[in-house]
Length: 616
Image (cartoon, rainbow, N blue to C red; front, top):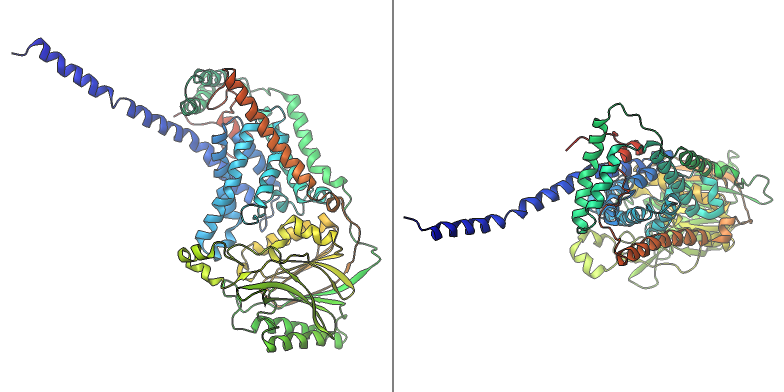
C-alpha cells in the first residue's frame, strides 16, 4: 500500500522533469519562425541583386540599376542594422556572382571567394540603409551611403576592386554627362538618388491605413521590454500574418495613397535626377586645333584562357605582322600613314631586353611602319624576384625610350600577397612565378606628336590613376590591355564601358588596344568611333583630338566622393547617437522598429514579388 508521501514525490519529480525541456521547443519554434519570416525578404534581395547585375555589360540594361537600388532601399526600410546587413549580403552575393562570372576561368573558388568578400561591403551598406531609413530624408542619405560603399570597395583590401560601381552601368545613359562634373562618384550618387526616390515614391503610393498596421505597431510595442532577438522574432512573425489578416478581413477596402503630395514630389525628384545630365555640356573634340592620326593594332592570341600565350614568340609575331601589313597598305596607297601606333599590353610575350630575337622583331615592325609605337611587354626588375608591366615608347630611329610601369598590379593575378603562407595552401598561385613590381609615376609620355596618358588594363577602373594622367598633361588617354584570359566572357565589354565613362569624365579621346579584343577608339563624348570584335586580328585607324582643357571633375578630384561618403557616414552616426540617447532615457527599443515596412508592401513597391504573403 502506497503512502501519501510516496505519491507526492514522483509528482514533484515529474513536474521538475517536465519544466526543464519545456522551453526548448519554444526556442526552436521561435528560431524557425524567425528564419521562415526572413526567407521571403531574403529571396527578394537575391532577385534584386541579380536585377542590378543585368544593368551592367554585357547586358547593358541600365534602367535596372535604378530599380535595383530602389529594391534594396525598400527591403532594408525600417529593419534593424543586423537585418539590413543580412539583406545587403543576400543582395550582394548573387549580384557579384553574375557580374564577375568571367572569373570562373580562374576557378569557381576564386569567383565565390571574391563575390563573398565584395558582398560584405554591400552588407555594411544594407546596415547603413536600415539605420538611416529612420531619418526624414532617408533617400538622400541612402544615396550617399552607396557612394561610401564604393569608396571603401575601391580601396580595400589590397588596393580595392572597383568592379560593380553604379557608374559603370551608366556609361551610355542620361546620367553619363554628370561624370564631367564629379567623376564616377557623382554618377553613382545620381543613380542611387533616383533609385531611393523611386523607392520612396512607390512606398507612399502603396502604403495604406490598413488595420494590419495597428496590429504590427502593437506587436512591436509589446516586445520593447524583451531582449532584441525575441523582439525581432515577434515583430517579424506578426508582420506577414497581420497584413494577410487585414487583407482578408476587409476584402472590399480600397487602398488610398497616404501622402500623395510627397509621392509626387519624390517622383519629380527622381525624374529630375535622371534628366539632370542633359544639362551638362560634354566636349566632343570637334574643331580641335591639334589632332593626331592613330593606328591601334590587335594582333590576337593563339587561344583564349589561362594559357593564352601559346608558344613563345607567337603573340609578338602576331602584332609585328599586323603592323607590317598596315605598313604595306600605306606603301601601296591603300591606307593613310598614321602618326603613332598603339600596341596592347603583353603584345610582346618576351622581354625584348633579355631576348635579342624579340628586340629585333619589334624594331623591324616599327621601322616598317616608320612612326613611334607604344609597345606592351614584361621587363625584368628591379630585382630577380620581380617583373614590371611596361608600356614602352619605341622610336623607328632610336629604338626604346620612355616607358610607363603599371602602378596597380592585380592581387593574386600579378602578385601574390602573403606568398609564403598562401602558396602552401593554394597551389594554383604558383602560376604567378614572380610578383609584378608597381610603378611610382603616372603614364604621361611623349609618343610622336602626342602627349599621351597611358594606363594599363584594370587601372582604367581606378579614378585617381586615370585622373593623374590628365592633370599631369595627358592630351589623349591610352588603355593598353590584355583580356585574352577572359575572352567572350563579358569582361572586355565591362572594361570598354569603363573607358567610355573616362572619356566623358576627363574630356579626352580614349584609345583601347587589346591583344584579343575589344580594341576601340572612343571620342571625348564617350561615343564609340570604331571597335573590333574579339579573337580576331584587326587594326583601327582614326584621327582623334589632342585636348588640353580640364573638366570640372579633373579640378575637384576626389572631393565629391569624400563629401558624399562622409555625409552618409555622419547620417549613420546621427542615428547611432540618437539610439544611445533614447536608451539612456529609458525609451530604447530593440528589434524591428514600429515603422518597419510590411513585406507585402515592400514586395509590391519593388515590383519584384506579389503583394500578398501567404498566411503561415
